[in-house]
Structure formats: structure tokens, C-alpha cells
Image 1 (tube, one colour):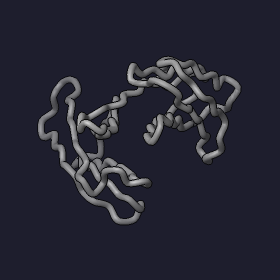
Image 2: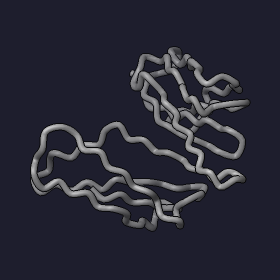
Image 3: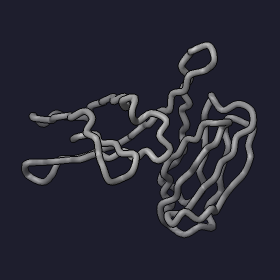
Length: 155
């Protein structure tokens, strides 16, 4: 698997390559830090290029993307956001111990149409999308200048 990134969706840059030469039981955990040219890009796209000699045994699970920002005292701050259960029948919880103060949660459908938007102040919030059709939705949490996105699936 090769991790790739692009700022325009046309020109792709290769990042790290991860090989799996011998089958092992269980999952392996990998970490990749994007290079400086990818950081703070407004339209950053990340891709995973899988190749398999026999056309099988390529899996990706529990992907976590963290956004790191530098505060005025040069400490790194990380916002981790958990959306669960995912997939669900339409009820999702958004949880983060780092969410403090006002923040906005927006949810858009696969076509980009805004279907939910609400301001919040607590570190755990329930979103009810049970009236929406089954499919893929995108949640966006805005905290000040930071934006964090995640995919949600309604079954």
C-alpha cells in the first residue's frame, strides 16, 4: 500500500509504502506524518493505493486522521473526534474530550447538500439522522479556525 496526497486531485505525491510480504494473523498498525507541503492545504486529498500480486488480501480498517495545530506557546494540540456507532441506523454520537467552548457540527449528504447544522458547547453530542436515506454522509466539526471531517454511514 502506498499513501498518496494531493492538493488538486490531479497531481499525486507518493508518501510511505507499506509492504506485507508474509501473511500474519491480526492487524498491523502504521503511522504516517504528512510532509510540510501537505500541511494546512485547504483542499488536501489523501489516497491509499493498494496492489496485490494475486488480487486479494488488501484491507484498511480503523483509519484515524489527526490534525495538529501549534498554539501560541508552540505546544502541539491534537483534536481527536469519535463518531459512533458507524455505520448506524441514523443515531450517531460525536465525542471528544478536547471540544471546549462553541463549535459547530455540519452534516452533508454525498452530493454536498447540508442536512444538519447545529452549534454545540458540550464534549458529547447525539446527532439524529434517522429520517435520512441510507447512504454516506460527511460530518464536519468547526472549532474556531480548525475544521475536522469524518465519514458516516447510515444503513
